[in-house]
Image (cartoon, rainbow, N blue to C red; front, side, top):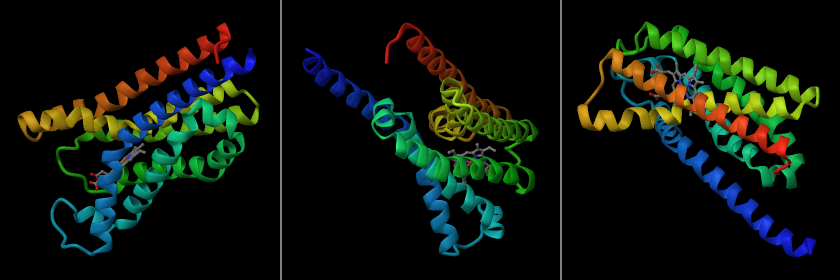
Length: 225
Ligand code: HEM
């Protein structure tokens, strides 16, 4: 009886894992591709223009940012698959310790560094800079709290903080969705609408993350896997 129930449960779990991984990787795809193009441009020593001057003159922070973001967003997606996590807990621990926490810290620190020191276009006004500072600092804080929770063996809290950190970072993906349709319909935004589109990406992710964290808590309380 147990065996006949185990097979459909396993296949439901695999389907759920595949769905989560596809969604998260799809979200990361556009910023990842933009990052690969930017690294290609820097590696090829492309001509400096007004749009790329800050990256060409000071490439290290953006290269660190993009490489770390690729690792964090793409490998990080697999940390959130319940089936994979329960079958391969050794991989989950190794990837978290050796790859994802260092990559997450590098994404946030390099993002903060660029916010502070890059000569960004005028459309990225003071309010957007403040949002970037807030996002970078919160992401670092959530990673630290996530590590602290797992060291205390508080897996529920660890899950929550790591989902929050990942959601903030993946604002880069949601911002494609909150800005591209408007750019196609109305052209480049002004400073105000640029801020609205960027902040909307982070806010949507924060709300979705809190919903996922609550649902997970509820499922554990009522005893659903
Ligand atoms: C996994 C998540 C992230 C991805 C995939 C990502 C991706 C990118 C990419 C591809 C660029 C280069 C843009 C270009 O070439 O024009 C970039 C720049 C930048 N990112 Fe991120 N990023 C992520 C997270 C963050 C976070 C959390 C912050 C918060 C501080 C941040 C702040 C910045 C800043 C300030 C720049 C420079 C913007 C400019 O000078 O125009 N990023 N990011």
